[in-house]
Image 1: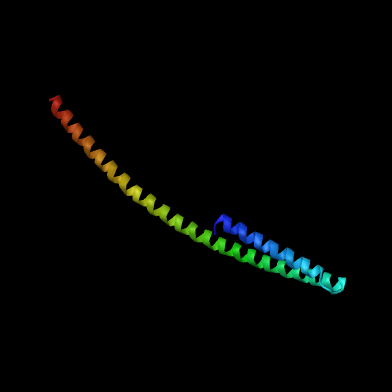
Image 2: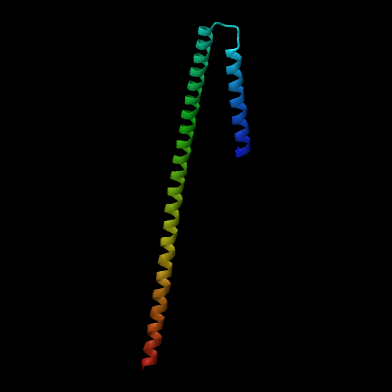
Length: 109
């Protein structure tokens, strides 16, 4: 979701909540009944938001854990590949060194 559409959705929800609140306040019910209704709606909204946040947290934790495992596996593969390449480079350098020693020995004669 882009930032603009998120802001628009938030503004819409805020407007709807304010409109509902004003509608309840101007309803022809008694004040005690209206306050109970507002309290009930506030509790329902709190419970709903708590549930959604908890669900989002769980999903985020699962995703982060999966990404962590994937990263660790790829890191291990990369280190392993680098180790093999380092061994190949060392072998090539040792061979070059041996060749240079042979050439140097021939030049010394």
